[in-house]
Image (cartoon, rainbow, N blue to C red; front, top):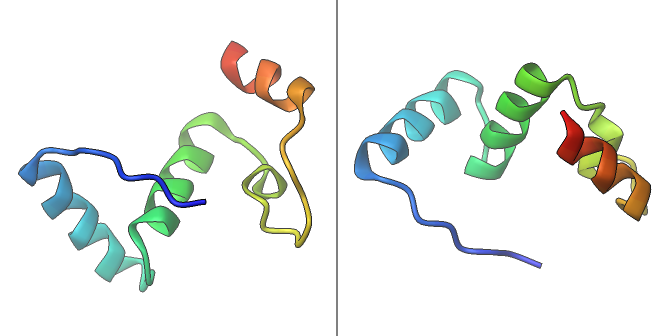
Length: 65
């Protein structure tokens, strides 16, 4: 399920630059990478493993970071 988020023009420009640097195809990929680096969240929490879903326990742990 896709969600629309609002960002400033400057933020969009930075995301576009990072997208090109990382050879990413979407802003979502760029944002996921930034989140992983900052919070050290494992890639499995981004459903990179097919069929992987967040459960309530994962959400609670993520919010405590």
